Length: 549
Image 1: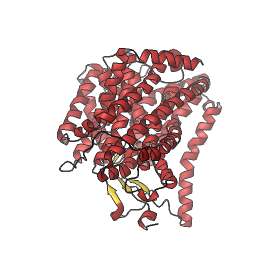
Image 2 (image 1 turned 30 degrees about the horizontal axis):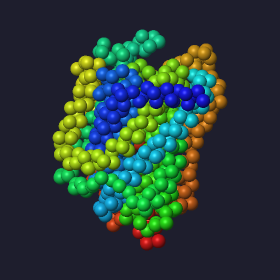
Image 3 (image 1 turned 90 degrees about the horizontal axis):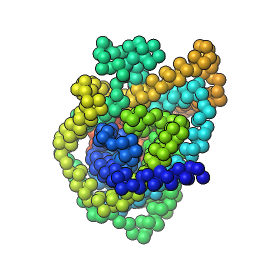
Image 4 (image 1 turned 90 degrees about the vertical axis):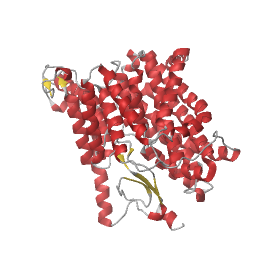
């Protein structure tokens, strides 16, 4: 009951004319930037983060919530109309959505994506309201050993589990932890990796790191892989759905929400797995399985709902534990840090009005998205025609402006260029970017918790296993690291192959097979995956489809 009262108070704050305007601006900006080809939600929020500097903390976070959901919606537009997913979680949407658009049903595809995003976002945010207080109640009783273990778990999840290569993921994590060491040691005052530069005494601004790795690095990578010419954009009118479309979509919306939210809420989340599971589920349950691969509306409704439900679920570990598990969540940490606010269980006690206003603004932003984007779909389609050189030149300009605004220091521009080059090289050699920024953000906090645990125990390392949550976290880490190689070795030993079909990214076979006649190549360049790496993504139909079964 107390939480319901706080949520109502949050709505009263979020529904003021000024805050409604901030939410509206955030939704429009997030969608306008997110709809541009090759730009995923992480890059959108990183690029637009500096625009919130001039606002008070409440207005800033409300606008940022609109940017967050707007960026998520924008990816479906490029996937459907341009066959270019802004991130790997939108690949499944492109598979069926673009086929619908080419068949003259682009309006229906956009409509089911928009309404599905609204339904899933609203239900998942409601689940956030119910789940978050319970997690906070548990987290408040956790000590330094448990927090240290949870952060190690987050590091392992985003580097050794979610990525395609464990070695590269761990190497990226090491780079991020090294960046987090820059500055003066808060305990001893010892300078670390400052190279005699006083401006580095406070460390590198997280906003600069986020903008450099996601906006600059991604823009340089995509610009280096631009294909000549612009792929044709399919024209679309105002999205609408007929009675049969509603009948075939509402169940996938609900199932996608149920599948997507838990994957986002687990501190090892990501939207690729739930979107693929939703697609497979809908294909098996559909009364029209023969339409899959040719433009089945269920193949758009379910994955889009799963994608947005997973995005809302990501806020559970972010707000309650302070753990960013996706690239977008990592950038959102920077939005809090710019006001010296640190997400975690104490946030609900120290800033209850702010937190519940933010959650209320998620409901409002989601509703605004539905009300605005259905009639504005033709306008977003026109944005896809912006020449790519102008587009990415503009991204670099605003990224530079944002880095300068972070501290009003030209020195930040130099850091931006260096880290932007690092982001480009990471993508060039297949190193995921997400572990870098997660390491840079959580590294100092992990060090603080480790020191606190060892100080309390007089240096006894056994104290790191003194709490049940820590033991469970280390057990799960061991299972994550040991079980997959064992299963792979057993399959190899007995000659059992992996799955016969699915998503293929960046040349990683992962047990999936390829057939040139049934392969849908996206006109893309490197798209941003959940682990922050950039790859050319293709969708490969299962062997059973190719055999006509």
